[in-house]
Length: 98
Image (cartoon, rainbow, N blue to C red; front, side):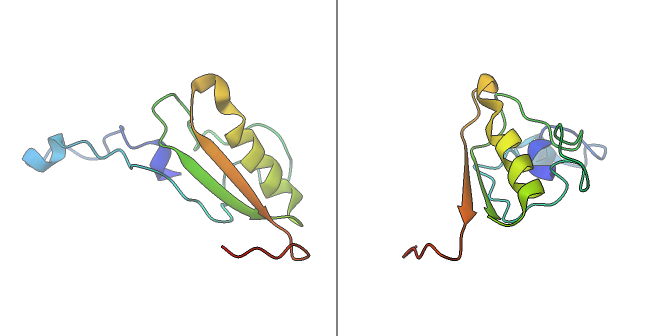
């Protein structure tokens, strides 16, 4: 998730624009892949770095995808890092007027 690595430089400074803060105001991964191993539940992927500077995050997954739901819960469970995160699970039997 590139949004969790906003402070890492991937190229040499080109101009003054490279000095600007590029931290996103929020993240909204919808049905995100690569939060963790795609076959085995467990820790978050090293590609997903959660710190106190991680932008507030809303994650949406479906109720029938237990693995992505677990990974979304692991992401949301990083409260010890003081990250604002929220997950939503869509269930077809529940009708919502969003």
